[in-house]
Image (cartoon, rainbow, N blue to C red; front, side, top):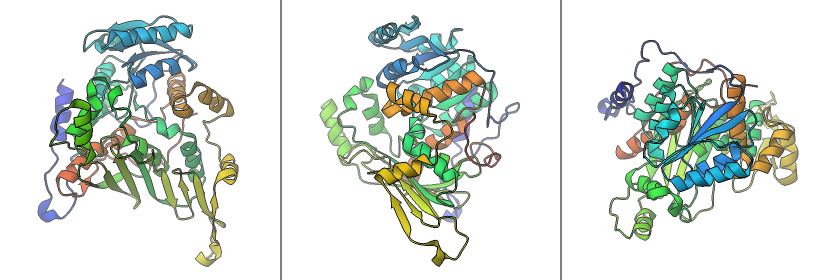
Length: 456
């Protein structure tokens, strides 16, 4: 496709070095093609019943089939997977829930094209392996469909610019299915931050620490372990970075500016590869631990980490550090606030800090309800499930906004900013942990809106 080739050429403008090391490695921003315009706060015509086509019926897709069946104002009208038995399994799930039989596509590697072309689909919901996320999304938008893409939606700057340009040109929504922004602690903490409880937020942290030893075999054709073998850097940044980017209002008054990454030596990767494939591996590229530090235009910092190979407890870090307070989710949820937070007096008048955990934490949170998290939605989400309910809230909000013709909670620029860490971290690492510019994916409109908000 010409548009994809254009994006590839733009991505290749990464300059290998700056003159005399005087600044970060450059990442060029291609000019917006003639006739395109921003999709910040994009709206589309309301859809009475959002007809959903799901591509990929493995772990994520199979759970989405059941979960989406409970979302009001939506209907699953088509499903697709390369393996017919997964299609049959999903058909049985839908039948058991009393749902109408959807169109079914399977067998060929490109069966998803038929789903994208179908007049019975408004939204293509993509749950395939990482390498096919972007090609499917591009094809779907070209055929007039909105798209929702599992994480990470894109792996390279080439793919990111292709998604941005196609969304801008077609005026179709392109959203990444980042569920962690809908976890209850994160949603409440976002409301607390927006109320000024932490003062001026200066630093945030996020991560994906999740030992995948029990799960490698569940990925079709060994695709996830294979991807880690072949790619260095933070290949899965979005769970950690998404929630903290909302707190900082990325491309809503601030933007990521410069990135630096460091990683450990690769120790466990070759062992896992040998265990799972029986083959030796001398060039496993993904490190056991990757750490990335990001600076923002407004003088704030972000620390993002990735580790799926060591036996450490599950941890997305999620920390918010402000002038008057702190929020942290792992290993236990807690807040730390100055007793006189927000005082205009001298520093000595601010008083000692108070730490909130347990019952006191719950009481504090109750005073800062997130505007979209009604008691009814929270109850339904916990009943339907999906990582404790956050997956259902994600699906509910997606359909709610499409049904009402509202801007989505996450747009294609969120997708771009959260996914770009993958390639930019690799570039930093391969250049001796050099600083790398983060492109302005909005092309100059990062401060057009002031602060993150939900459309209600």
